[in-house]
Image 1 (cartoon, rainbow, N blue to C red):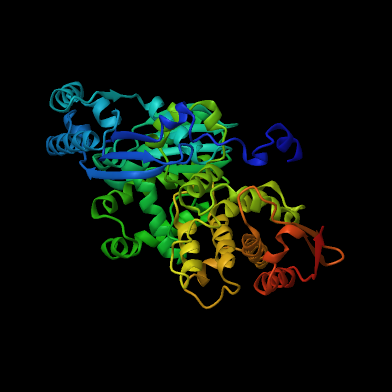
Image 2: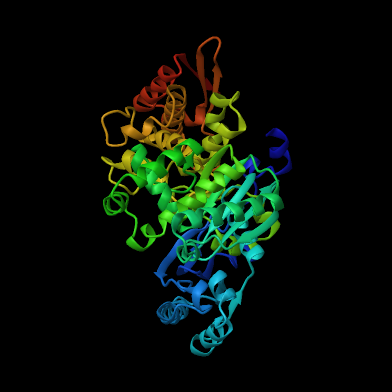
Length: 513
């Protein structure tokens, strides 16, 4: 960390901000349309380019690929609905002054005999150019979407759409081999011979995919609406407390248990309780047959849901390498601080202040400390009585990439302690169980350190004192320049003592002349 600070003296381990670079500003608002076999969706990304927010997100369930296996043509009703959606999206993009929409079409349009005619009609009626991509390109873009959220991800991506299923390898920040297959729910629904014939077809196809890719024993990343719907049902079965799909983890055993759970319960009741749409629930039986065979064939070590896919992959495609190399979590937190904090830039000084308490922490924990310091003041506009809860609620449910659910709770709990000493007796208590007692205590220490450190600021670049912590001797020392010693009043002293108590240490204050 010291070497990094020497290399970039103004920003230390945070690196130079990229928000104002011309190449990055061009990505501040990007519109993407995905014309899929099941749905047509427009997303407008906005915010921190490395970890963009969804400024606008609209989906129309068109089922363009319904009946394609029998007729060879796009579903007529779906085609009408898709055209209406694209007319609307083009109009919205003009109203929002977007430089343009990036429109891609996948399996249904590329396989239908009237696919080219459909694209020409879209061009004539809306002026939008539809890029029809092949299956391998679809797999590659979906994998890039996962890399947008998980820069260090490794394993196998499985993207299921209405009419196809793609697999892609990722590792070392790059996409490896990509394959495509016809294992989309809309196509499987049209197979004659019932479930036995369908499962036999899935098995044969999956074995062919394994022959192309070889063993894949790492993490399996699931991309696509059918997988997200399945994850909601898994959450329902488990009584999982955090209803965030991105980075939701499942084991192969849990997947099998959830398949049994779905099969023995009323689909309509499950759908209603889990918040799954009727059209999506109708495809779950076909998707779970694919998932069952997928995990039996490739035997992944664990399974993660990715909310990022082809649309995010298109955005990632436009990023310069300098931006791809940045941590999406830290960039999102820096952007939030820049936009919402009372004193933008103070987060990195607060990080330097609290770091002596985490000298022996692994890099994965230091990363969370850094994120929390950047976010420590972004909710200051909330009512004081609810500020702690707002902090926790915001970060645990925020659109943040590269963050496990337990890490969301860690940052949320630290921010909660930033504003309140106690954490018990509120509606978030069930989420605390995603952390063990040791991590809960570490989050409390971080929160109390930020709560105290925030009292010592005067201006962004002013010294706020230094902490020294001696774990073996159980001593916590505060060194304050005499010029800011008036800031250390009885309230600040109480907060310093509270921090020392959390560390089970004796507090000591040294005024430096």
